[in-house]
Every structure is written in C-alpha cells, then in structure tokens.
Length: 219
Image 1 (cartoon, one colour):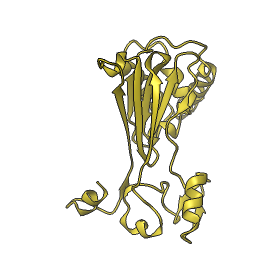
Image 2: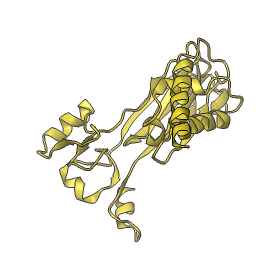
Image 3: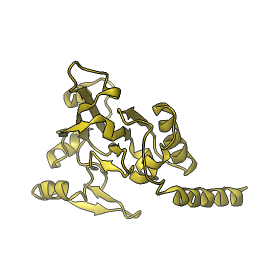
C-alpha cells in the first residue's frame, strides 16, 4: 500500500494513517459477528487513528491501539537509534523531525530514511462476544478533543451503532474540533447492555457549557 501511494500520479509527498479491525466469528456453526458468542478481533494499526473496546460489565474504555507519536515510549526508543531529532513546538506538541506528529504512516517519503515506517502494529484478541458491547474506531479529529471514556460514555443508550457514532461526531464538532473527524462503531453480542454509570456526563456538560459561553461572547 505504501508503494502504491508513493507511486500514484496524485501523490504530493504527504502522509496518511490507517486502522483496520477484523471481527471473525469462532462459533460453530459460524454466526454473524454481532451475535457470536466467541469472536477473534484483530487490529492492524498505523498512526494516530484509534480503536476502543467497550465491556458490558462497567463500560470502562479498553484501548486496542496506541498513538504512534514521537513521545510514545516504544516509538521513542525505536527512533532514538536513528539519530534524528524530536522537537516540541509552540503548542507544546512533540514533532519528529520538527514537523511530523506521527512516526508511522503511509507516504511521507522524505522521512522514511529517518525512521518513519508504514509497518503496522498487529494484535489479535479472543473475546466472549456477550461480554463486550462494541468496538469503536475514530480519527484524530475526535481524539484531539475527547478522551477515551468520554467517547464510550457518549454511546450509552444509543439504539443503533450508527446513532452512537453520530453522537461522538456531534460532540467533537460542538467542541470545535479543527481536524477531519471519522467514527465507526461495530456492535458485538453485548450491544445495548452496558452496565455501570456514565462516568463523564458532568464533565461533558461542563465542557460544552464553556464552549457556549465563548460563542456567546463572539456574538
């Protein structure tokens, strides 16, 4: 894929990220993934998109991927052997070679010699489907403004996975996310049965109220 992108006629030297989740039924006979009692869940991950798993018992966010950022300990150790530099910009964000937020990506040809790679992290988990409600994936336009638990709590009570994804997207937009935002919610057998409390309800309400204040002042 990396070679195809760089050889494309429209390639302009920029980079991109990707996260893929494969959900495979282990039931015999096989059932649809969304009703399977046993599933194999595989994540294939490059960059700063993200997948979270929601357990039924308490709804606490379980990360399935990590951000491939320069300050990620595993990435920092890998890149430190190459001699290039980590720079903190005026916003307090770390940048590899002074410009790159991600240390794994498709494209970014000029940075490949300095350690940027399209090699993905791959992990497989065997799950009892009824113990988990859903898997949700999202781009950095979401994670830049909302934390993991806020994202999962926003999905509580949604009748359809698409409705859950729209709630997360709307929240990020209302908080003024400056980046492109994509959300995908994949239901598992425990869909609609999340227990425990909404742990971020008050926090979300407070954050949105402050945004409204700033908007009022601009008017």
